[in-house]
Image (cartoon, rainbow, N blue to C red; front, side):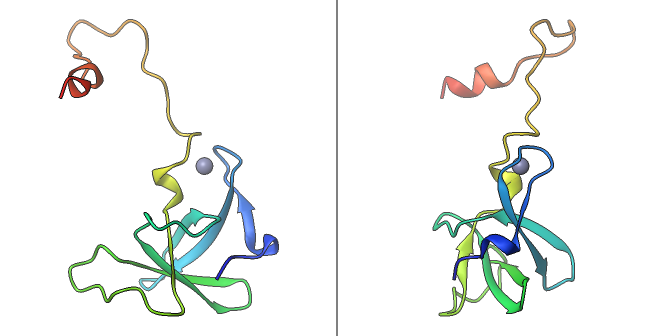
Length: 103
Ligand SMILES: [Zn+2]
């Protein structure tokens, strides 16, 4: 199932189309507009313009049902929130990103 363009909104941070979903706990979760096999959210439409999402990572999560599609949480791919590190860091701060790349 693919959301219609009417169901999509624009992310306030990056401007990409996103889908508002409601988790089973009643919270809102933004997911990317298109299904993604790498996504950990099972989403499906529960009423016109309302989508429900549930995490596939939970310990007791059931596998993807026939009516559900995997979606990626938008926060995982949003490019608008990334703030570049300053060129000059304070003396008591260590850059960890350079150390991670060595592995
Ligand atoms: Zn975004």
